Amino acid sequence: MTKIQPSDIMPLEQYDRVRDEYRQRIFEIKKARRIGVGEYLNFLFENADTMKYQIQEMARVEQLKDDTAVKHEIETYNELVPDPNEITASLLIEINDPAARAFKLRELVGLQDSVSMLIDKDYQVQAEFDDRQITDGKISSVHYLRFPLGEKAADAFLSTSDVELLITHPACSYRQPLNQEQLEAMKEDLRASRS
View 1 (cartoon, helix red, strand yellow):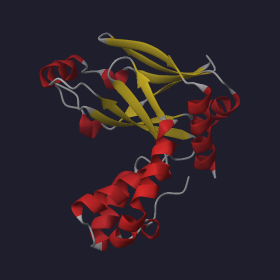
View 2: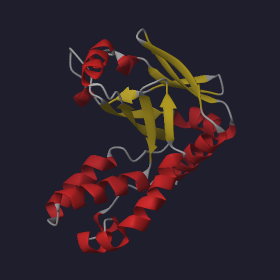
View 3: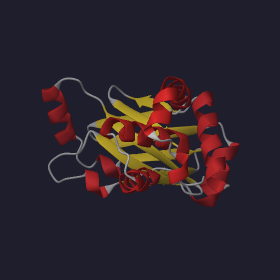
View 4: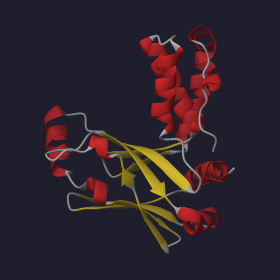
């Protein structure tokens, strides 16, 4: 999958003119890539389109017109555009009650060692979390992670209909199979990462 270039980002005025249609297209792309696990874990599997949208929205909110500022956003979000034979995701821990959220974020310390993807009951790929989002006493409510499949596990992913997300933390243990729509969207991204 090609990384995002400055020429891929629309100037603010142009984006404002097409924003409603653009957002609708991105929401459709995200729909098949959003996977809820348990009561409060939500994975959004990312690709170049979802990251371009994040950059466009960030530039709009912060009124970024300076090329240097836009390039900084591109560099930041390009980290989540998958490399070859890789799948990337944002993991959101969504708990509305502030007290319950604070408790759960402390309870989930170590989650970074407890998330993996099981492909065709044969390849278990550990998620790699961004260390910048982890502290000793609690974890962040948003995480960016990679599943570095490698060529063999990526080939297996592309040829199977059996992929599960596994969470094995003592305070949070789940197996979540991906449905066909989710699998096809992620296979599309995986194929694009190889081109």
